[in-house]
Length: 294
Ligand code: R5P
View (tube, protein in one colour):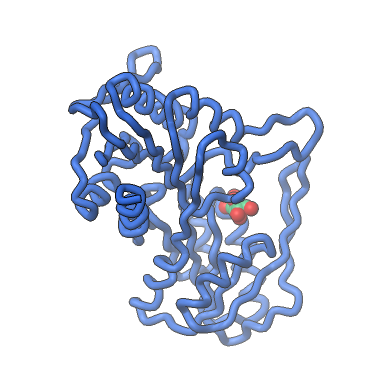
């Protein structure tokens, strides 16, 4: 198996190649003056199983297209199997028609990748596992929550209360709890599908004097974490940290979260950022080694 270093995840791809011992395929890429993308594989993939490592964080459309172009390049240049390794899978939140007249974005993304030649996909903490069922090829989501929780344990934070910002993400807090050894729970979050406005409540939560880590899959604008931190302050939490797998951190999200009294934000290199303190390389490498020998 060879590792294609997608332009959006070059550093992560390098780490995966180092950990797996797999040969790297470098990518020449550029954007033409009119905004169109160009990619070229620098070495042979003839008869190889290739893993293309390319995240699809903002700007997601151009990164998705680069991924499709790379798959097409690999297929046309003789690769026998193409695994797309997409740490942050864009459009997974639109996995069904919530309102009449909508589309199913993740299905269109999957169809585009099939047409480009992708045979299977590996992602990390996809927002909805159901989203992967829309693909016409095998797709798996790995969980980085244990790795993130281990970061806190190494830092000396043990028995912290693992909190998810809504009930749907409780499984994330539960995974963290297994490593942290404390308790876990969730807030309640309601979203207005028309305006996008959310409301959060923390009924029945006992975090007085406790260290709390808010775990989420994605931090986008930071609104969810800022709201959760406010509730935790009102409930008397002593220390509040937050962690996510995909730190999109749109606009001044990082500052807003820290201003809300959160002591530290921890994310992974799924989305390279100032808070990407945990690498996904060991998790993805283990899976690729298993795929190689399987
Ligand atoms: C939503 O269900 C996700 O799990 C995140 O909670 C959400 O994407 C975070 O968005 P924001 O940071 O904009 O509140």
